Amino acid sequence: MNKDFSQNAILEDIKKVSNFLGKDNLTGAEYLRHGNYSHGPIERLFGSIINAIRHAGLKISRDRVRIKDKNLILQDIIRVVKKLNRDNLSIKLYFEHGHFSDGPLKRFFGSITNAFKEAGLKKYRNIYEDRVIEDLKRCGKLLQKSYITKEDYSKIGHYSYSTVLKKLGGLSKMNMLFGFVKPKQNHYTQEQLINVLKKFYVDNNFVPTKRCMTRKNGYPCDKTYYAMFPGLSWSDILKLADLEPQTRYQGKDKIWYDSCEEMFIANTLFDNSIQYESHKRVCETRKWTCDFYLSDQDLWLEYDGLGQFRLHPKQFEEKINFYKTNNYKYLIITNYKNILKILRHE
Image (cartoon, rainbow, N blue to C red; front, top):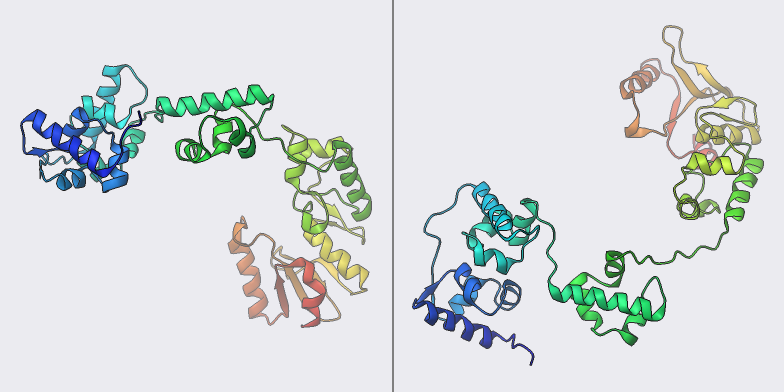
């Protein structure tokens, strides 16, 4: 016979507890110690246990002493855990053995579950949740699958999907609880991915970085590589393609650059026959160099790829201030791919 979770049933049970204790008032803890309903359904229907007691026509019995130190509550939770020899607690178990009602716990921690978490307790799973998990294991064995979909479970599962969702947060989380892993769909083989890296090097004359490998650029992204080569770093994956990770990049002008973005700018200028000098000294008194000096336009071009992540921002600011105070014609760009469009508007 299914338990009645209606408002009327709960209110009747609260009145029974009141008669049993011979009182016309109750605390939340008193009801949870002697009542037939747990904290969850009462809160869902009434908002709080106090509201339910009020709806039952009883007076509210408040804690006699207003707790001022939350550590007293945490110590009491730990006391109950040690007493019961457990590493977790249900709300009902705490109210059966603890000294405090739900009011102080909510006041200090926001919720009773948060109080348990701050006390270092493991998450509590009731028997019903364990039954749902066991049922999924049964389905896995029956279907001989390492991952159960919603469609699979709806055919042979003992519980509804809404129950799975309510108890465990959905099938994905449920699968993860005991190691079922959803198979990753990948359209590339390991050999194909390695060949993409080799072709990239041949076409572009530099070793690809993770930032270069994006679907937007027409390449499989770095996540695809990590999925197909589990446990390997990007450097290890490059070595499988007979490539060594680079910290500097050689442009078509045979000059080495500190980043592939700077090399891209240099190659663009080179391909479009724009006269430039890379790493030109800005002045004699400081060791500053400019990324590119465009002689035909007398333009000092700086590529700022680091932005807020720059290690020495003050040095860069000093160089820019030097440009301003000495009337240098300069340009700072952050989008290297639109370099030609930007230069046409200068």
